[in-house]
View 1 (cartoon, rainbow, N blue to C red):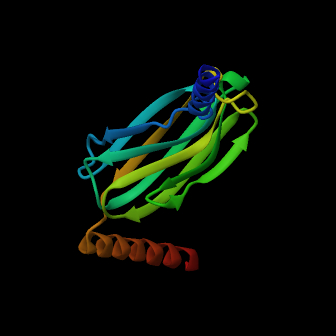
View 2: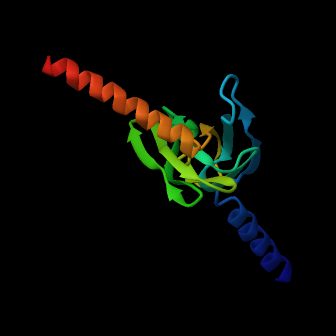
Length: 174
């Protein structure tokens, strides 16, 4: 009788571990942009091999304080290659999510940050399939980092815009 109980407990434990897609944690190095000092970017992708809910974490190294924008995309025409994003955040601030049929898109507009950059993505791999079903569902992302302009650079830019606006106004009055 004990053997039967142990066997049932083992099967339940095996089923419990297969109830979710694998959670993935990666560290990604930002690459300096050519021709734009202080700018960095990174592109990455991953594939979930089991159906179910997931929570992935990406930590970016190589830049800290700057303006950041990011995007995620997944295209899956079949349940076995589909991913539905349920949330995505960059340092705790939410991405805007949109679903267009089999295409899922998450977008993060240009925002100033300081400190390490971490993206967390939650979703369902292989929606509609039994948890633990073997699949190959993937998504990809990009992250762009631009330097925070110095005060004198910003002042010069605003002064230049003022001059251009003044010339345009003078022209329109003539």
